[in-house]
Image (tube, rainbow, N blue to C red; front, top):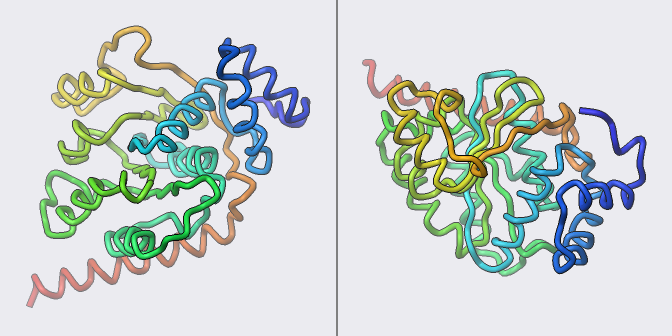
Length: 265
């Protein structure tokens, strides 16, 4: 993806996106105001995904909920794209809102529930990185049930939840059919396919046989192809993320160690 933010000013980028998308006059004032507040995050992906972020932001502001799943192979940049999207929807997003285990996920939700203080945007983005282990249909345990119950209260807490996983079809059916409103397949490094609406249900049904997204034929207008940068949002320091990730991995390994200890005398 070309470094357009180095070639154009932020105001010029906003005008380019508006022209590219053909934004209606009635939407331009609000979109421009929203776009201008994202300069400190960076121009990270194509106009179509920018517009999708704007749409999700508007829905969340109205009190509606939204749930995003990012699927793709390891090393393709799912986490990077998830952080980019989260930051564009919630500019206050930071590494503390990235979790790798169920306990951290619930603790963040609980802290939000106990606090009357909202972010400047009035909402919070939360990324559950590599969610397959926690939400797999093959792991219907107490942790899984707690997480699914938590999803149903995200609307009241004004949470946007993003899940990163290697395969969409490994995610529990409750999440796939009833929670996911935006599905993003990272097809290769810096390239993705965005899927919305009834196409998500089609993929859940038809693609279940092959555990595939790309092989499913979708109606025109329910998907698009786009690109994203390999960079983190400017608001996230990579070294802080690496430390946070290492801590998450350590907690996960300790949890697994405990489970093995209970199963093996």
